[in-house]
Each structure stands twice: as structure tokens, then as C-alpha cells.
Image 1 (tube, rainbow, N blue to C red):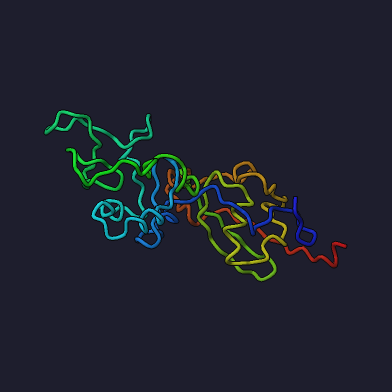
Image 2 (image 1 turned 135 degrees about the vertical axis):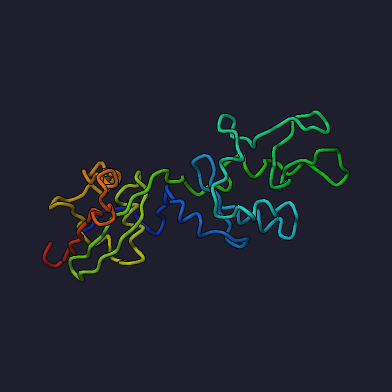
Length: 228
């Protein structure tokens, strides 16, 4: 495992995130930066939007930019839902917002070609990660500077992934020891695996504001000179 000074960990220059929250997906909501999620995965459809820029077939996708569109799909097949067309009696894709890119027309047309290869919703060309089905808030407190930040993270994210989220607030976050309740955290584990339970629902049941009891992680700077 690569090392930065005395701190072991992944090389963040090539680090690949696995999870994205719904709020993060929602930030990518226009034609120049277009993400959607469906069936538990997150997709960057910006290249598709660029390829079909100006086409009416792109309009239904633009309308749902930044949203979860799992209701478009059959979870058993992973394909867009189908129905029997009342006009032709044939099985057709169900597109309530109108026909979109790679959806064939209901009747044969001379301007339609199906030689585009794999439809955009099949395969993994556009996949960037998984959607965090459950998220939680965590406070990160830098004991050196007394700065505190609250992050929304995925429940299944490892501490390394949370550290990566925190880098915009502290570019040297990997040079700190991360602790909770006086114990060093295992950076390969999730918050729950490190014993940091998500008690927000319990607080809600008790009529208490869970946001007032957000768990805190304390960061202690590793002074390389003293470590040596």
C-alpha cells in the first residue's frame, strides 16, 4: 500500500469512489453535466447528451437530469418497462415522457436505424458508481485547528471513502489519525463496523432531534518529526 510520509493508505490521485448520495446525483442536472440513477447505480449520461444535442429524443432524459429513474425500469430484467401498444398490438417500450434516445418508433420509419449498438441503459459504459440507498451525517473535527464540518455519507462507505469526501476541506486529511471515542478507526471499515452506530431513527422515535446528536470523528495531526 502506498505511503505518504508515515501515513499508509490509497493513492488518492487514482482513487475511485464507489458510492454517491442522491444529493450528489442531483447536482448534475443539466445537459453539460447530466447524471441519473436507476436500480441502485449512478450513470453519467453527459457523453450521450453531447452526442444527441439538439435532438427531441434527448428531451425526456434532460427532464430527469439529476433524478432517480428506477420507475422507468423492470427490476427483474433491467430493461425499460414494456406494454402492449394499443395501436399495433405489439410489445413496446413504455415511455410516459415520450420516446427517448435508442427507443424504436411505434411504426416502421425510413429514418430509423438500429445499428447504434447497445442502448444507453444497457451495459456499463456510463456507470460511475453505486447509489447510497441509506445515508447518514457525521461530524469531523480537526483537533489541530478546531474546525468542524458535517458530511452526508453513504452508510456502506469505508472510512477511506469518507476521508476522500473530506479532502476539499483539508487536503492533508490523510496525515491525521482518525479517532472516535478515544479509539483509532480502521479506515478499511465502515462507520458501523467501527462501532459508530446510526441512532438517528431511534432519536426520532424518542421525539429527539437526531441532528443534535450527530456522531463526531476527531482528527489528530501526525507530526512526522515526533513520530520518527
